[in-house]
Length: 103
Image (cartoon, rainbow, N blue to C red; front, top):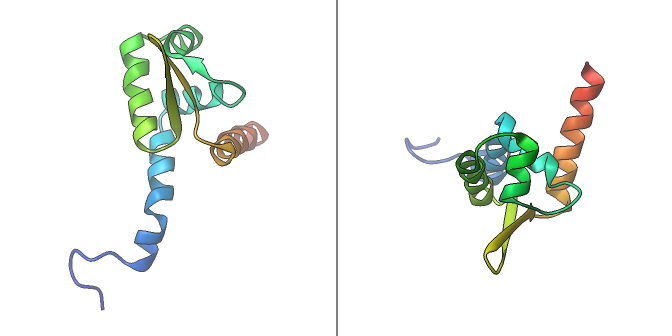
């Protein structure tokens, strides 16, 4: 029997997966991820594309980075953001395609 405060095996097994879905569970963050499917972008490019403020984009980028959904490459004074890997790209693309089919 599980002691109070202890996690079940299934909780431990899926924690990282839950963190990814939780990070993507916001319209701005899923939009950022979708923008990054085909190529890396700077904060300025994402701000322009999403038509929201730079501080707001930066806030959401931080959440995505902490969940290992995206990575940042610093190039001089510019940061370039991209999806962590092809698995994340597939998740974002598949969810988008799935929701389009539901409409």
